[in-house]
Length: 228
Length: 228
Image (cartoon, rainbow over all chains, first blue to last red; front, side, top):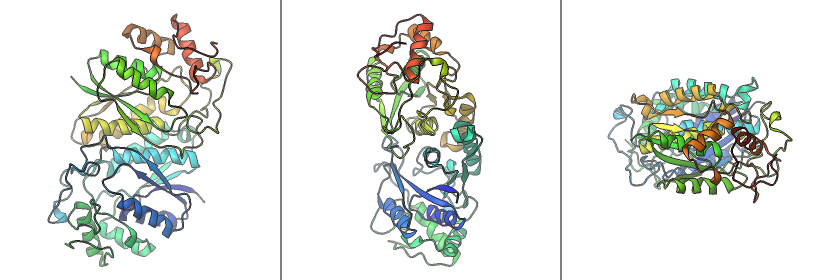
């Protein structure tokens, strides 16, 4: 079995990605990074998802990014935008952008791969129904792959750590369908940018998720304040 | 004045790099990452160096890499190699390699640049008198630059965060000479991989440093257990 580090935030996309990696026969090692995000709700989901699959050795790494004070996902003084529909999303890079987040996460995942002897990183990035983040685009993953080839011991030794982003080109509806097909525990996941008792139903992340379930023809089993 | 984030470990190379960035007229913002390294000695040096230059806003970011348990710089159960001479160094990647360290550090520095509106990262990597780490080589920096172009908001908006590694092609002796010329506080720096009261004089880092001072014709003012 090939070992694979799977970045698991506790959201829908990373959970479906984890389900995919498991279905491919990888020995998966989930990695969650607690980076000072606005709320701990999605971290709880990450733990529940890892427990659902009975995965041992869920690695949680603390990274204190409170210095990244311009991001609405880190600083409580920057409001999370609310919109009236998913159609407005993705036209520009919103304040929920965490500077260089996927670069940082993939770098840490690469270091963990080298430590654990894994040769693959799975990341649930998506470039279609997404918030417009630059580090979710295919050209970014291509460039980062080159960094791993030339900048790691594994790469220099002629082996390779491959980054896999299996849902990069799927719509949110297709991700939901894939999750259903694989039996992914989507009811345990948390996507809302806010950390309330219920998902808000108004932030970009909620809007994209609700649209995805609607278009896929499945009910989203988590509870919302408002279902748009 | 251009803002620049300078990765400052507290060692000789990063301190001379900081001195260089200051001499070039940049408004420098030192960034130190406390990643669970074997000892805190170099972190104290980083703080003293920042104080020497009266730099406000020294950012220290905590990143808990104890999961990277195969590295001698993180795990106390992995011994730091001792050698009899600097000539043996660099033939292979030693156990002091921290997987993906410079990739992780540069990623965090990039995120901080975007937060602070800086357009430059200075890093004291060196590819000549060095320990053989893959992420200290010019091909790595070239690949990482491309990641910044395509994977950050700054890059997508047509501006750029440039990585500068001004001592990449200098010998350790040339780094010492540059430090002397710039008045860098090399007496405050710490290079030893161990965290004793005195530098050990036997690890790769001490050997390379001592060789550099010797060849440059200057005395290294820090105290050693053994001077080879």
